[in-house]
Length: 238
Ligand code: UDP
Image (tube, rainbow, N blue to C red):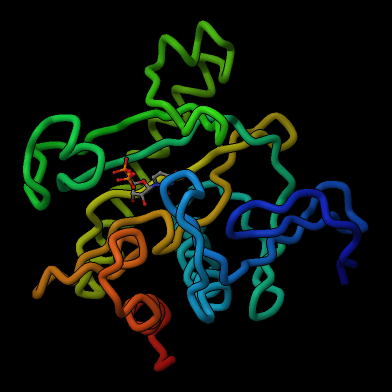
């Protein structure tokens, strides 16, 4: 049994605890929700429980597909045991359909299928509002080594392929998502979470939004949408 120790870090949606094993941490999923770099704050009731279940299911699915992640196991409703990472300060976004900041940047409507997945990088800095960067910034500012970026690019594309088919089978279109990577004993692992907080998920038939855009844009039905994703991903009635 791994013992929970002191709090190491509290983020917007999760708390990270040390354990008696220096290689392992516990991620605790909160109900707190933020948007627009924490200018908008709120609570999505039971989000922590739902996101822990969704993330655990998706990470074990990816592990089964040969992707190396920080996931060890789900410990309780809100807690996940994971490998301790030194987080690479680059947010990796993969897009299949236009939405959000891509629509703004390129001046196109939301909902246009892209001819190939678009890969973007953002510098992970709350202070700066996560500005978009490219691989030459990553290299010049030594955010990640070249070999690490080769891996990150490959894994991001592989995750996209696997997640797209995972969601299609559940009647959901994977519009875009954000992932993070970290170093663990010299290896680059997929970390953080994969949840409706960090993905755009649309119902494949109705195109209804089933993700944090409902909170960001005050669309209502936030809890219901998260619960629906949970039911489809985990195959159980919430
Ligand atoms: N995203 C995220 N955290 C961020 C910014 C974006 O998880 O700090 C996710 C977001 O949920 C979406 C994808 O990354 O699935 C692309 O987001 P976008 O660049 O369109 O930004 P937004 O419109 O959310 O500001």
